[in-house]
Image (tube, rainbow, N blue to C red; front, top):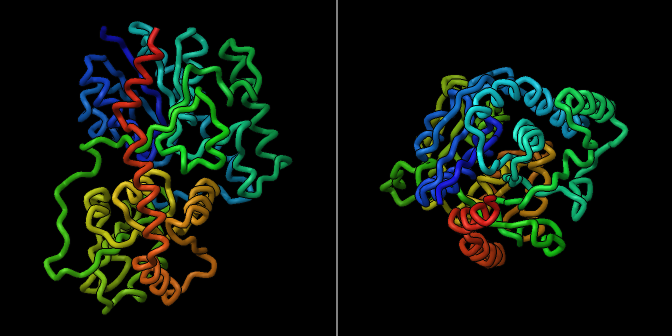
Length: 393
């Protein structure tokens, strides 16, 4: 029986990509899916067959050259404040789009607070989506990265959250807001990658990557020279890093490597000066296709990229830039599927030596192969769709 399912997400492509395969599968099974999305993401979401609902966001564009992540000392508190402001600004617009055609079930990203509130207000069953490491009573990010609970951003967040919830007619507490009574939690990575994964019970489902075939596929082929391929990417947010990119030139110019280097849309490649002949530099690249041919992946340790590399059986070098990425990089290092480096201590020699070591390390290769099996057998879009259907009223 066909149902109407809504997906509430944030504009970040790293949060949208993991949902696309699930949306495609739900539509293939005959369900109707509505997906609010900013105009910049409408194309990739619309390709799934979902009905897109445009809305205006406060979040920075991929092309904003002035974007910078919050300072590490206030990263978590400031991020909560930013996404609370986003929910406050967008909820009226999103509610108006759905009130004449209410969904039977809501899927909402962990940071898409508007979806959380809309479901609560209208008594619609919901599922929470986790494209990042789960932090809950079973395991907390504070176990891995330092967080100051007395930082002023947390007090400001709690004050503003209480007002926001009261304005929406809800009496739930701050803890209840971040720990909702949803029908399921879906994590887009295997249980083996979650810290203390065996502590999570039946309400937590680890379905693995669900990006789908349409996300980033373009038929990229490796160079005819047969050079080994290294993909180096800092993602779509904190990627205006010309100094780092020039360090990559220094590290690999004249080496046997063919280096694919996406630099994002916040800067122009002309800012980098002469580009070595063995480098392929572009604003964006088809990451999934390239990983099918890569010997090593150097990244900021975003969860989506980490899972795509694991799915392709590629060892990794992690250069985390935020607390969330630190968490992933720590787990990557802990599971021995790559090596974690620090920007603070990075040199061209350290980068090159680490890439060359990781690419041929047999112990890392064995760990990658083991985790790859977990990624490939987690169930993906089909299992996610089964779980979602089981939660329909």
